[in-house]
View 1 (cartoon, rainbow, N blue to C red):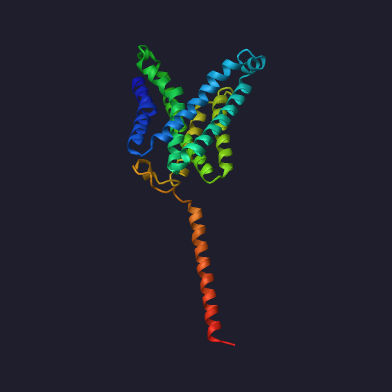
View 2: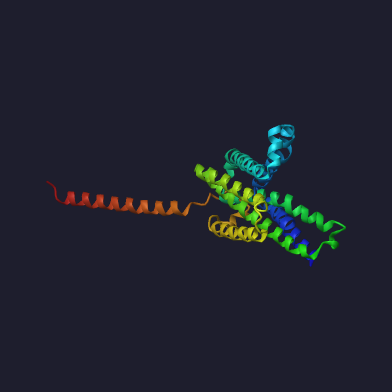
Amino acid sequence: MVLFSQIVLVLLTLILPFIGTMAYCYIKDSGWKPVVYGILEMGTTLILLRLILPMIFINSDWFLNLLNNQLAFNFVYCLAFALILTLLNFIAFRFHLQSCFLASKGVVFGFEEGFIYEALFIGFVGLSSLLSSSAPDIDPSAIGGLWMALAEALSVLVFFAGFGYQMAKGVENKDYKWIALYALEVFALLWIGSCWSLWNLPRLVFIVLMLVLAGVTAWLLKDKIDWSLLFNQSETNEPQEDPDYLKELEEYEKKLQAKRKAQFEANKKQDSNPS
């Protein structure tokens, strides 16, 4: 059962997302762009915060004091992570992805960010455990932890796909409150996740909460884009119109037609009764 759980974990967190990514890049014209930029932005953020900046500040007293206060460190780390990732994503969408922009590409972009994040911290750890010579000696009681890790990884994929859509629409419509909301959501996800155990709260409750929120995210996302565009080869598809905008446009057309009709009737009446 332990071996089966490890195989499922690796399959769903590494192999299937990788196959889907390769299929998208192969089928979709310029499909590599949201994939590469999504991977690049998340990778750059992680390298900056986990390697470069700690090396720069490792001899600073304030940094050492911060490391000794886990709650404060988590807050600063998650805040810096959210701000840096938001800035890099804004630059990517604004200057590199705008010319071939679809809401579906925002979902792909975010999915790739989530894929890299969960793969580094969950997927590759599961693969290492699976290939380890000590894998058969794993305590069967750890099976629950493997399935919770899988649930967490899948939730991260859904969350970041939704985050990518928000960033895409925010940049496309120049509605910067969505970009601010993106930063807030990334911060909340990382901060709550990193502090949950420090608060001595049950991990199972956290996993259930993540699954519920991921389900809500997927439900809100399902009608936002035309999913058939994900694997259409052509890049000539126009961005999907906002349903609210289409409704407002339809109402405007009706009012305009009624105004023209009223003007026509008034002119007709005036012509039939010359002074």
